[in-house]
Length: 301
Image 1 (cartoon, one colour):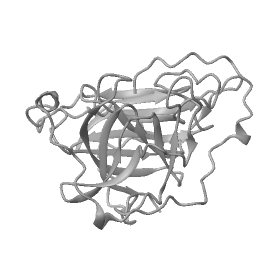
Image 2 (cartoon, one colour; image 1 turned 45 degrees about the horizontal axis):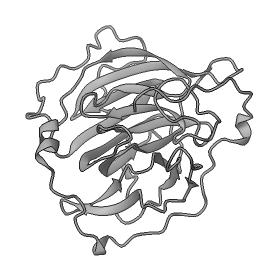
Image 3 (spheres, helix red, strand yellow; image 1 turned 45 degrees about the vertical axis):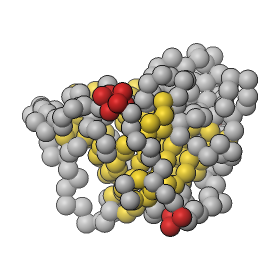
Image 4 (cartoon, helix red, strand yellow; image 1 turned 180 degrees about the vertical axis):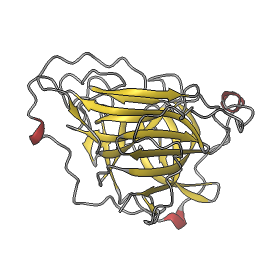
């Protein structure tokens, strides 16, 4: 998610009246048996964009001086609760679709209005996957809110790179809060007017070939970085993890810790900073085709 959204003017927001509400109507199911592999063969320039080799010996962050409350071991421990899926392979029942403006001259499409089929279920490598075309900016928003959690998923780029950015960019957002369409890009600025953007205010696991796994924010969220190691994105499917535990967010790529932060606060216009630790998830549509599969979450009892 690049920075550079239009600067928002200070506004007295009536946020309580505009917080995201989960839609009671589940999206229509799709028949996985009728799906064919939707991923075209990657071109030579697409393949060259991916790293030639896996960073199996990538360094991990030094946690020897980690502050109290941060475990050096971030593998999620031996939690007694089971992993559960956020994508059953046949429907998007756990998610809501939200789309921003198809063009600068048009209004946001809003909730559950996806005439271009930006979000769909397809078969890739013989398995069901969520396809996000990137044609219109927006996100799949989880119907559930999460606080402490361990999320894991796999992603793979498609062949289409949209003209809006000219490079591959997507992400998995969490601690998402506030009005729909409150932001349109990374950085502290809110959309102007509020609601004209494509995303919720949130923290993001950045997905772009040159900066995979970085910890960035959308909207007026501040935090303290505890380190960053830049990994090498693999060709094909990449495995990501996000661990939120006791106010500390940890990002992993292929099992290696790549970013960590703590002390998340949000400052709405006209209000004092407030701690933030819970919110919905978002799977980002931002110009480029991307596939997600094996979306699973573990929540402490």
